[in-house]
Image (tube, rainbow, N blue to C red; front, side, top):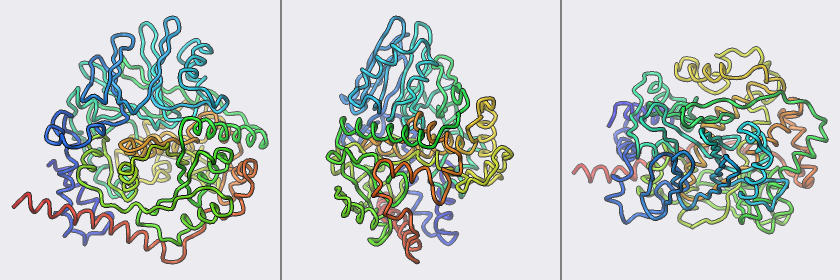
Length: 553
């Protein structure tokens, strides 16, 4: 096992349990041995696991290059222009349309809130009819909601770009013999051997306490592999040049009247929920917070095809506000709510698939939710509120900070890391220097920091992990919606009142405002949740320790 794996494991245990957790570290090493298979080529780890569900191998993923990728019958390959081949898992949909010398391919799920009945083929045909080049095509996707990637090809060039928050991810090889891009570095690794980075700054970052405590929240466009990069939100990839180029912001955001903002945002959200409900039955995660309440309000006319749920994950007590308030809302407002408690232990085969499919996949209490949905064969489209905090001043909740004067140290501090971690400093500075400040009027650098760095990295990781079991969509992942809400003055988007969002809920379902938002748990509940989190990881390590001892005997 590499030395950086050992250091990550030690710091991870110390970061969560304190330095007295040394006695658990030797047991934790077995878990690192298990997850180290993440770097192995696809044809090796599954040769001795043929009894496992083959459908789970890189489920809901794709790879684009000059060769086919066909690990089993759940994968198919499709010829595109310029000799490129799109290989894709059968649970990840795609559509392709051609007009004159332009071919566009949409991977994933996209809906148009103003035309809820349109499918992806109709969406692509309209986009082609209304666009003259790449930039106009990108601009015309502004209203789309979903989790998708679009490949844009003319006679000589190929470009790729993602949904606004980059929740359907693209990773690419920068200096290989042949260009490759895919939904995860692990897929590229099946065609081109990737080496773990030996950079001191990368290793220092990955072994930092903050990295463990912040659910492995990455920073920047690099990866833990040399020569493999991540396409960030608001950038497109020039495939043949292996270069990402910023396309947004490309003009200032103009202020709008509050009522216009409310009306437009409500139309987008309601139309989006209608469109999604026409595609599939929906499963909406509900809490006592703002984002899920807004989505519930938007879904008022789609409740016949939607169920809400709360998952305690063996962490939340029955009297926790995130359990009780949804229950009270469901009882009074008469909608379906399932209060569940995903508590099954995660088997080794599931961890194996998860870490093999997704670079940097984590084992957290919420990972139980993925396993629970997998073994229950959940077929519904999962809806969540990720991305909503872009427009709620996440790094400046009270709207009192003058971000125009923010230094690099300020940005790193607000992002949640110490300015003594060189990798974080390097990546945030690289990102800031790439901003087109002539177009920043109306944009706050802190909102873009959350949008591109927080959502583009940490926010995109959990949907990728969930691909093993379900498809998850956030209706807030819509450029037009984000632009519309950001056009409001910051004080209307500020805590604790969130005036703009109260007005938005009032527009769609006013009765939902009678229930409190994010009340503080009773004294002791937070401590109980933290203790249960520690117990979860301890029990997981204790569970796998006997297997390690048996293997070494």
